[in-house]
Image (cartoon, rainbow, N blue to C red; front, side, top):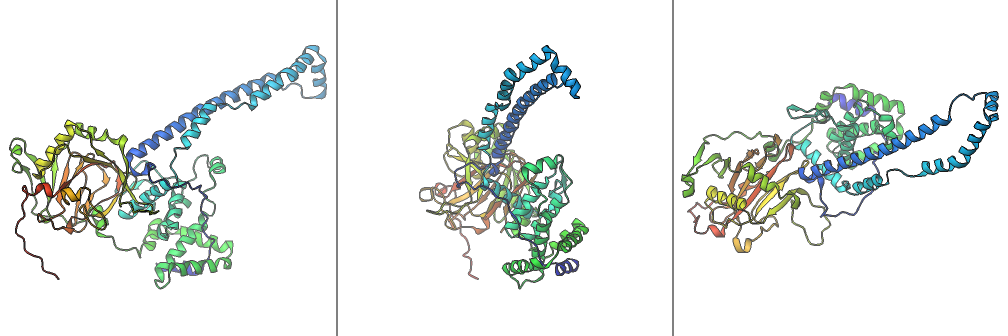
Amino acid sequence: MKQFLSLLTALLFLSPIIGEDVEEKPYNENRERYSSSTVGLLKLLELEMQFIENLKNYTDLLSAKANTLQDLIDSVDRGMERTLAEREKYVSNPLNGFGLMRRTHQDWPKWHHYINTTVGRVELQALDDILGKAPDSQDMKEALIGMNRIERTYALEAKDLAKGRLLDKQYDIQLSIRDCLSLGQHKFQEGDYFRASMWYRMAIKHEPEPNAKEFNTILGDPLKDLKQNYAKATIIHGLSAGNLSLSIQNVLDITEATIQKASPADLEAFIAELLNQTDDEMSREMSAFEPSPTAYEIGCRGLFPKRTNLVCRYNFTTTPFLRLAPLKMEEVNHDPYIVMYHEVLSDREIEEMKGRSGQMSNGWADQKEANSTKIRDIVCRHTWWREQSAIKERVNRRISDMTNFDFPPQEDLQVANYGLGTHFKPHYDYTSDGYETPDVLTLGDRLGSIIFYASDVPQGGATVFPRSRVSIFPRKGSSVFWYNLYDDGRIDTRSQHSVCPVIVGDRWTLTKWLHIVPQMFVMPCKPRKIEKSP
């Protein structure tokens, strides 16, 4: 850190960061968010494929037009009449002279009309229609937030993400220079100067991309002001970390006040000194003052201590039916009680469930407040499986077998699909924090919850109980069950849980909440010691 701080003392300046002008559209909460689910991202991929297909058709038409014009040029431009004598000889022949007169009088206007005629009108209109369906600025912002959430939750580093390394696995993909720049700009705007600096660094060190010169004339030069912004983010982070008595506004004021004191040569020398350090060295120095991970983040990383005295067994006692067809049960935690059941959702049932994806809508982390203009966090895309179906009834009966709870087999189930860095913050399934569970007046609060995993998730996507220090990673066809209340109706705060962002994979879930009133005679209260106040 000493080396870094010495650099700061050498240079306290730089121009303000220059952001991109983006046309803002009115926010519509009901508009589908592509980034909120893999279902949405698939739609966006199909939209890009349509865009490229129409672009191919359009370029084919342009190419055909260019070829026709080239044929015209070849037919007239013989390249033989270079000198004045040669031109005089050419026009003195009546056949050449007449041909010249006819072409310039009759053909030229038609060629001019052909040149001015727009080709590919249908394709251009299709491109306009596709552009109207492109992600808006809020969807882009949520994608940036999702990437930031993945990076922070799993302690990933820009130097690895930029090169396609996620945790301990290398993927055959790299982020583009504009991807890195966009992530850096977002983090700068959010006040995360450490990560902004590292993403700017990755953009600066990015290899030149093919056709960069041509693309830059259209998309803008990503290198413009990049080094200055990198240095500025690095300085602000260093000053903030090195002097905790300074507020961020003080740091910004100091930076702006010294802008005029440095020369371009000083700036270049400072940036060169920063770039001379290796990525690992810079990352270590910059992250020295990072806060310790939360219990939620530790759980998402799978770092909770392993439980002991847990067993896997066949459950054949919960209901009489299980004597004929016992279920594979794995104890996850004894107190509070959390168990997993394996191989309880078939591929056919999963396909039936996923058939509801066309009905999905935005799923929110919070209830909408009256007259509120706050933009709520989207958790996922979800829908309710309401239609009567033999498969849905079979799944509900299976839930009864696993829990011994009483409810109609026709009750609804919730289908959910998660997207780019989406997550569900730590929360309770029972009524709490201003959230009132549906049907609470008639069915009572949510006694228990059960989640079926309808897909494997190679990396990330765990269900975490931060207060109980338990992490459960999705396994296709399995389910997890826990209690939210004690049998006397008192809340169990240890049931607080969350959904970690998926790093790689497709997280599909089927969820059922089980209410307490129908279980009045199925699960009577047991005597319990009264907890003493501390």
